[in-house]
Image (tube, rainbow, N blue to C red; front, side, top):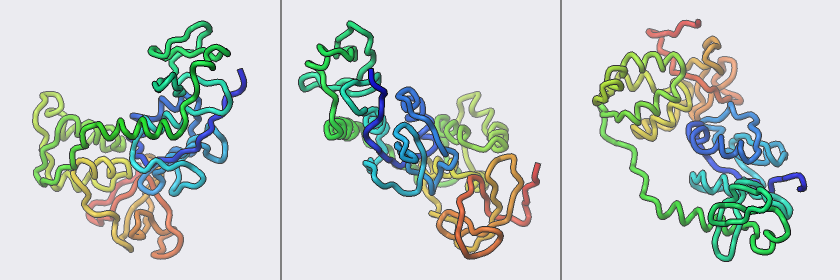
Length: 285
């Protein structure tokens, strides 16, 4: 069998939560390798294959080029297109066609041919009855599948006190920085254990906002967006990792922050940030 090489560079916007939940493991099983994934957030939010022009590298970027862009979040389509390979041989996870039926390969063991179970050997006989699915066939198949699904529920628009479901609370806790996981456990612990109603006050919600990019994206989906970005020139505290010390930076009004305390120049994205509150300054640990 010849060395496998992926053939279809693709890109799609997604959050870190979506990547971890829907895409990370299937792409790893296909043979993809993560590169520079720690920048995934509001600005760097386009997951791309063929990263650095290496066919099995994954990375995130602000923009895309020379790739097929999937316009809406569709993890099944992304994985299917990512599994397309060069040459006659196929791999486990790649999609084939038998007659007018598309199926995903689950096994390529010698002597096993059964498209209903996904068995497809790489011998000459199999290649007479099976062929690789085209990009157009996969797009048509998985786009139809998405359209047939129920519409996603709109983010809740009612405000405070906000009734939070247990599932929504778990989503917030999952992406929260470590120090906030402790705060959330103390605030919501009894309700999570007793399966009660979680009421979120506006004051507590404000504390959660702008703790990190990932939690902002989840809050946007659950509560609805407050405002798109921190206003230009607003003093903020930023850091790259949870165990780093805080640094003063000014927001650029577009989701990034000016460098070295200036209110102009080339901005930069930071993973953790919060609006400066002189009466409630954090302490570096």
